[in-house]
Length: 241
Image: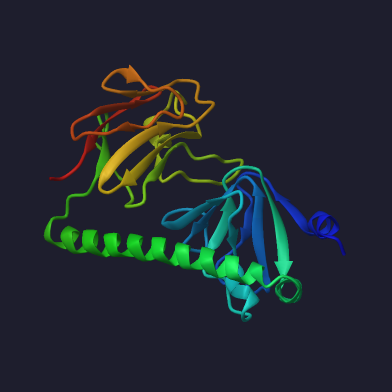
């Protein structure tokens, strides 16, 4: 079978919010992302803590090629996503025909393990600090005073989407009776203990820092005390010293 025929017969498409597989599922298939983006959640439902977001060119589920073990994550498509499925038998044939495939995979796995190890070290360090000082990096609602903690690897800000079932990390649904916040409104990124706000594309009502509107895709650093607006919802950025 030619490579083009194999890819054509092995393609799967997942709509935004669709679950690729759940934690605990048994399978012997890995996935390579052709387009789109997925998120790997720690639990059995696509909400709460997550470990990675992967996009075009990345692969996931590779552990099932080595042994029939349960899935360690719940994987959900964050947008319309196309993947190629690779079974254990197909993978072994690929390695026999082109050993460079296994080398590239091991290199990618080593890189991913380094990234996860670094993230774990940061999380452990922050966890130890949290026991000494319970304050966390957060957004605090001006109206309700509710505190939304920001995860160590960042956060998606928006509203719950009943069509896809996706809960953003910072869910402003209850803060936004006017529906001014988009489902996927903005992202908060964390790099070396610095936090940056980036508006998602297609947002109608804007994202603001200290009254200044952010251009879509433009990352702006958040400083303690900054007044942050998502549509008509206003919060303060808090970061312990």
